[in-house]
Image (tube, rainbow, N blue to C red; front, side, top):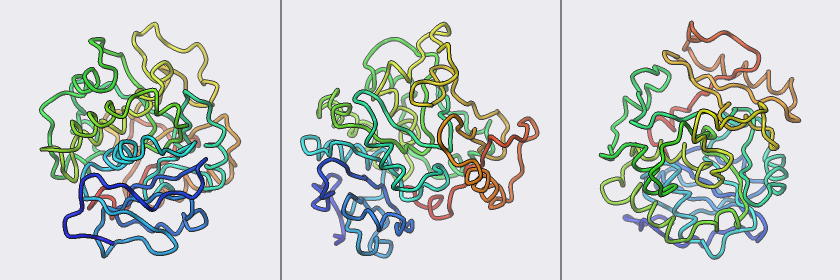
Length: 323
């Protein structure tokens, strides 16, 4: 039940009944019926107020609409640090614009993730982040929805935040790899490589105080930092020579330094279609086609059409109030 002024951190009684697996959901006003079959394994944090509250059988804990999914996930880790499930799958309220798998398939893959690794999901390939002075929104028309929104700025560059709160070092990486949409699964031992105090400090610096805003720029940075934070050996490229020999790593992801880059000037957010896994090709092509048709935007002229690309389309609800 919602209160008029919910606390920034609440202990969620609506936890998964399965100690081995939990789906942590960052919700605003999306239709969560796709989770109903696994409702007993869900821990839903809803930020959309009473009118957008999830329907039964899902239960939920209210949070203020701040910080996007990064605030939600860090809030969960901090509050439940000693009670994390064996494996946690972190998702947003809508995932079909990023993932081409059923929930059962996602759970199966999550349960197989080794300690120290991070499981991500098709259809989107891992992407590169190297805008250490700040994301140049104006160079990417496809990201206009974010640059046009009211945004709370940090007053610190992504590099400063990365060095102070993610790796706590003076080195500057060439790049890091990230999963668009911050949809991933990890074992609790992987989370526990960092202390609760580490995550609490990150939560407070990134999303509380002056950054307690519906669209803080730190929310976009945190989306890009999760993998590097949880498995730096795999997802941080420190030098140009620090490049994987093979195109893909053992998990089927694009390997270190080989991550997909959105072309400057793109008017549609094109993400490379992930290959090399047991993804049904017909279903993938169908999804790519349906996403392409659902937007009136056109493909950037400097990006060739390819059966291995897909368009990431965000719902109107997500535009208006990101979790």
